[in-house]
Length: 191
Image 1: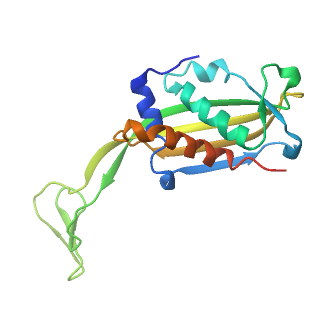
Image 2: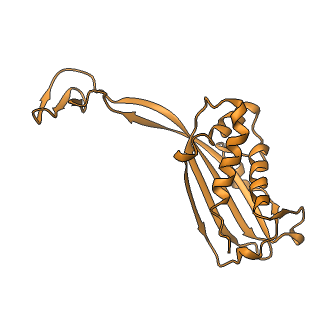
Image 3: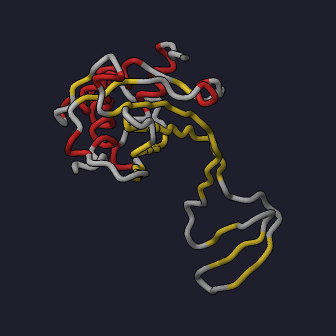
């Protein structure tokens, strides 16, 4: 199990920034009566996932998720024999490029100087560089998986994905973690 250093915590907590820009998806993967759940146990993600370079675990994230599950009325237990469900989470960090266009809406250079002028709806060419701006952004993904403790089968999976904002002040990070945990656990079926 890899626990991230404090610097990585900042990146992970930034995952929580801007809840409105987060993409949350979930699906129930098996018939299961969620209204019968009273207890849960934390278990580790499969070794093949934890060994990947972009996979992280963080105690603050787990604590926030634990609190959100407790708010549902579920109690954490330490032994599988006492658990109704088992809970797994992990975080993945990735980077990709995004592009922005010009601020001048009248003329848009497409590539290598080809231009389109909206005012007279014509194409032209001038020897110039493309006006697309390229920048790299970080994307964080939180995976939350629930398993039936008795059968071991997966019963639900939730994914929360967002752009990372590395400028989030440290004093706001715990509140953001709470919001993220609430957002993803809210997708767990009630019955």
